[in-house]
Length: 559
Image 1 (cartoon, one colour):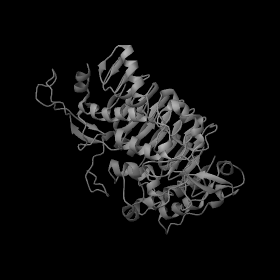
Image 2 (cartoon, rainbow, N blue to C red):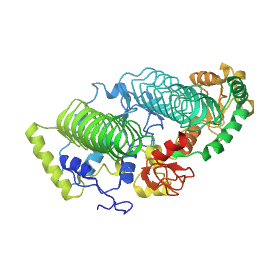
Image 3 (cartoon, rainbow, N blue to C red):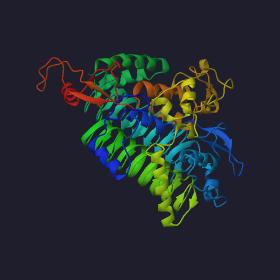
Image 4 (cartoon, rainbow, N blue to C red):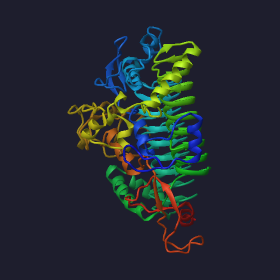
């Protein structure tokens, strides 16, 4: 069994994964699943934006690269213009030097665009990793969203605020892992719900408040049925102002502890292990997959097939160690690619094929280190480089961490695999000491912020507020206010970053899988023993307080 170079623990490689590796001419990995994922994630910054100037036209722009990043950054119009050519940075391969040194130099020298925005996006200047969206603000990793504010990882949603991992929904506020829902707030792991508040694992419910593990219910209050008139009366009182709703938030935090959690929310799938798997088959140790087949140890990928150790991709096929790709086939060890095929060690390349060690190319073919070759010469040199990389123990590894253009605490790796500044330095990466933000410019003290949404006028959007948690200044956006008015909730007294951190760490899970045993100790027809013997992989670690049940035990408890 291979042994991870980082944690020194042994790990196995599934026979189906070995077939993918053989097909791609790659030996078994040298990092375990978690450290491999961390390695790719430390190249991806989704939500930390900085003000800097375009390196070509000089215009002030927002960018995922801070002023301290070694990256050369162009605005998107300049990057896609004919005013420069990435081939001008091409160089000959030097057989006397490690390949990673040469591609590392190219990554730093070739210009990068400021934000990753795909397709047609309208009025989405303050967004990143967004596809075909409109009127979104500080929303990240979004597919075809409209009017979404302070959201991340959302698909086909409209007028949602402060949400994470939601799909096909409208008018949601502070919802997590929720889909096909409408006009609700503070839901977690819910589906097909409307007009619900403070719910967990609800399915096809309407007008439910503070309830857990319900199916096809209406007018339930903390899991107890009410007549409509009494439910409406209690709801009006609960939503009267911030203080009254906060009382229920604290009550719900205690109420939900008595109910079990299903180990994973996997739907319409077969032969799988992992978390949040939907409409998939033949999946091994994956998290957040939709409509995939024969994929392994991957995170947040859609409509993909025959992929091993990939993350944040859509329509990817026959690929290994690839991050942030859209419509790509036959790729290895590459980051940020679109509409391309047969790529190795490519960084930010588009509508291209047969590239090796290239950065920033568009519409190119048979290039190595950004230099153009004839097909025969390309194939010969490519084989020579791969042979040298195998000798130097480079082949099969993703780009080294020191070639990331991001500071570690700006990347998504930091939230899933937190490190201290000192640990990051040993890791060979930067740390961003100044992540932006303004202080001491507030025009309205927290004491004067209205506690009831009925008393809050549109003038609040012109005020500057102070976060009660971190002290940074923030503003209420007009769309945010309109959604709050729709769900009858008071404006927040924390900035959007503090709200996101609470949402992520309190109500979701980091991208790791743990093997554990079902916590059910109730006798069922399928287990007579005091405790269910079923074991499974779940994103809920052993040290969490929730009771985690296998699917049969969970369904028995609900029905």
